[in-house]
Length: 439
Image (cartoon, rainbow, N blue to C red; front, side):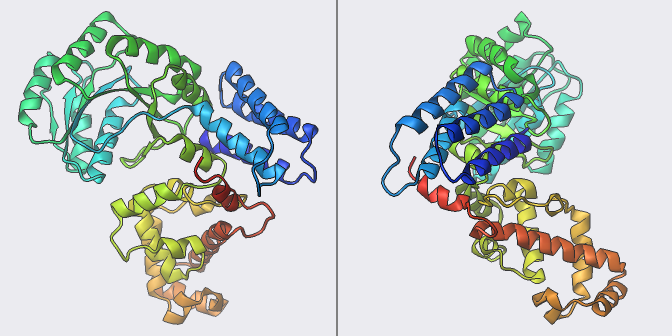
């Protein structure tokens, strides 16, 4: 959903950027393109119409700020109204707290609990988890296995059926943890006993936050689920999962914001790192290809030691094969490459899909190949002739095709990163980011 919506929105803005005159007809054409993109993402028709009217009125009635062209002014309005559409984010503080996780069965709550624990761990807080799901067989095994991989203490008692007792014992056992996350049981529907249990757990834990986990595939139906949980325990934050696998993600996003329960995180992948703090301005900025440099720098500071990666060099798009491998290793620590690349303001430059298709196995193979290269070849890949490729293949136990694949990957990566400097196009989104500063 994120990819399709982002591409559709960027296409609409590109079309506007190519207009010689920004008049009523150009604005109306832009609005039609935006409506089509948002409706395809399952955003509520009423909300889409409200957004369209706001963009139209502001674009035709407001005077551009001093030093800003009409075109840039309209794009700025689109940005601001899209930020309003997805609503404010929920509060997340880096301090001692207890978090109660709620949600129906199948929403991804248990996996999200482990991802959330990893988030606070990365922020330097001593984190622990309690498994209070006594309904689903294997819930404790799943959660404890996920937590063991990231060295997070996980308390549970598979033989005990009283979730209240488990939580009470867990809080006593994990008393020295700064952040305690309680994973509760889910059902296929909101039965009364489920609601009563989570009300009791809320009282017992004296929860700082009560966060609801919702599957993005629910679309606009997410609103009803959020409201029913909110009525029971005053939900103060929502985590939307599986945003990468459904066309209804836009519906879930916009539906939840209507309940006034701010979105705190978005999950869009399978790994333990695939949980992102939801910031409306950053989210829309990335959808429009403007990147999120603040998030990129924060992620680098959390996961990469000094000297492992030079963000400035990466932003310039100037790097050799030697640099590429060093930076790929560091980026691998920061999380999925596609997620990290979305934080870089690439503007209108489309990143080839192959850039993201680099597994740990491929990275190991690339290392063997590069170990067979000379210093000159690593620093200046342009010298790699057919005879050199043949020699490198023989020396690394690879085929010439594999060596060429590495070279192609390197060229794609370099080409993509050049987008940061506004390569190949009149319309530079990075410049727009500066224009949007302080909004």
